[in-house]
Picture 1 (tube, one colour):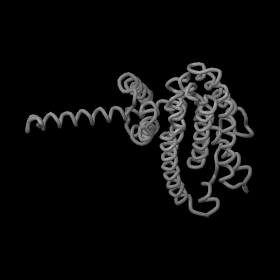
Picture 2 (spheres, helix red, strand yellow):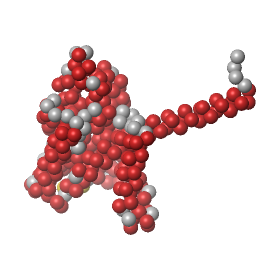
Picture 3 (cartoon, rainbow, N blue to C red):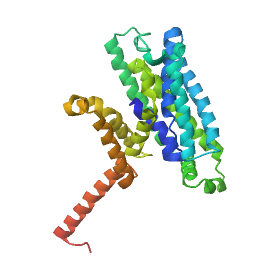
Picture 4 (spheres, rainbow, N blue to C red):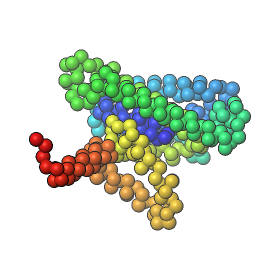
Length: 303
């Protein structure tokens, strides 16, 4: 669910605005380390204040990247965001006072439920899991409604043709900034939830591979379909720890998992650019067509 939340933010960039970014990992890591630093060194700070501070910092950095996107786009924008992600990684790796370096940062208790309400660790984990469900559903509804609104339609117009969008009075500055602001806010919140639930984070979690996996999850599921993004996140991030790690072959040959995911991406991009959602629609259409043919054979054509 945490990865799906980050993916929902990425859909604003890729699915609606048509912007390429490889800097997602850095913003998720930033949210995680801000949470760890605040909860360890500022014990009296409210958890909500930590979330708000993370969102504000993420929004400020997102605005900077948004302004950059006005001058460059396409592969060049992807390279710039890749450089930003690498800057974040080096900070996570070497800023020992803030991140504890390669050893990673951790928090001892679950926020709110264990720190404020005094619940046991097991009950706190269950309660935080329920909170994750509520946040995921809430953000899914928000993303869906925003995508169907005039804002989402303006982003789609900008994606299809920036010149035509400008001719219709759509501000590229406004909607490119908004796409990056939303994406970085979701990523920062994902980092907060990542640290709060797993209670440990290391720089190795936020390499370019993380950004590519988020991109893969969105592409596999469908760049503008939220159910598809959730399923794509499950395929990329969930199948291995839930199922494959218990199979001896995959445990001894973990590289096969990455190769399999790579093949899925290639097949989806080549044959189903709409992702799993398009595949499901094609299968549904096939069976409906088959059912229609059977009815025609059985009863003949209607008058």
